[in-house]
Image 1 (tube, one colour):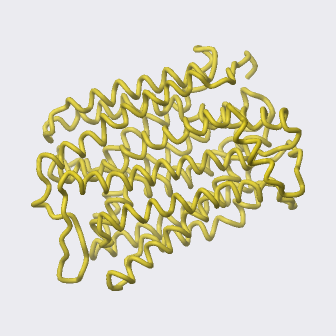
Image 2 (tube, helix red, strand yellow):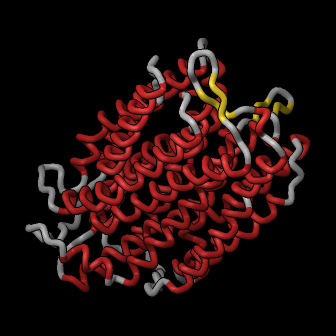
Image 3 (spheres, helix red, strand yellow):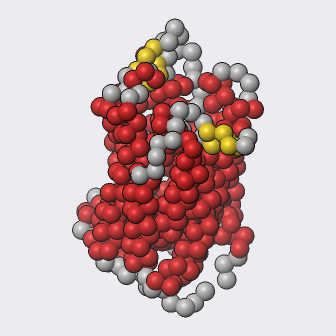
Length: 453
C-alpha cells in the first residue's frame, strides 16, 4: 500500500518545478525580458529559440544518463536531491538585472537562461521518470499523476496569486522587485525539490541497458505510441504557452493595465491564478473522470474539446475592463479541460515506457520522460518566442530609455497589436486544442482502467 505521505512527497516535486519555476518562466519571462530586464523583442525571441535547440540535445542526454544512474538513493532520486540547490540558485540569478550595457545584458540573459534550462532538465526528467519505478499498478500511476498535477496547480495558484502583492510590498525599482521575488521563490523551489527526493520510494528496478547505444533512439522513432504522445505533449504546451505568455500583454495593452475591483487587484498573474486553482481541482477529479469515460485516451479527447470551445468563446468577449469577470469565468472553464488532461499526459508517458520495455527488453523510462520535458520546454519557449515575433509583425515597436533599457513603445500598440494579443490568447490556442484532440484520438494505447483503487 502506497502511503499518502509519499503521494504528497511526489506532488512537491512538481509544486517546485511546475508550480513555481515553470509557471513564472512561462508567464513572467516574456514580459520581464522586454519590459524590465531590457531585451528587445527580437533578442527575446532568439533567446527562447536557441534555448529550445539546446534542449533537443540536453533532454534526451539527461534521460539516458538518468536511466543508467546507480546510487544509494536509487536511479532517479539522486538527481532531485543533488540538483535542488543549483536549481534554486540559477532560478534566482535569472531574475537579477545586472548594470551592464546592451551586449553585457544579452550575454548574461542568454547564459543564465541556458543554464536554467539545463538544470531544469537535470531535475525534471528524473522526477517524471520516477512514475515508472514507484509502482506498476495502472490506477496508482494515475493517482500519482493526479497528485503531481494538484501539487503543480496548487503551488501555481499560490505563486501567481501572490505575485502582484509581493511585488507591491517590495520597495525599490522594478528590477529590484523582480530580483527579490526570484530569490524568494528560488529558495522555496529548492526546498520542495529536495523534500520530494527524500520522501518518495523507488520500488521497481529498471531493466538497464548498461552500455550506451544509439539503438535506443532508433527504437523511439519506431515507437508509434511515443511519437503520437510526444506530438500531443508539444501541442499541450503550445496551448498553455501561448496563453500564459500572452497574458501579460493582454492586461497591459488590451485592458490598459491592472484591473482593480473593490480593492482586489487582477493583473496577468492573478488572471491565470484563477485557472490554476481550477486545474488543481479538476486535476484531482481526473482519475474519477477517466474511469467514468472508460479510458485515458477518450478522456483526453473530451478534455481537449473543452479547451478548444472555451478558447474560441474568449475571443468574442469585448476588450473592456468592465468584462473582467466574464474573462475570469472563461479562463476557469478552459482550465477545467486543462486540469482533466494534465495528469493523463504523464500517466500515458508511463504507459509508453512500459510498452517500450516490453517491446525492446530494456528500460528507457528516463529517455521517454525526457521527451515530455522537452515538449514542455519546446512548447513554452517557442510560443513565447512566437508571441514576441507576432507582436513585432503586428506593429509593436521598441523604445530605449536614458539608461539604455528597451521596452515596447506604448504609442505603437495599435488596434492590430491588441487584436493579435487577443487572438494569441484565444483563437490560436483553440486551433492547437483541436489538433490535441485528434492526436489523442489516434493514440494506440487505450489506457483502460480496472476497478482497483
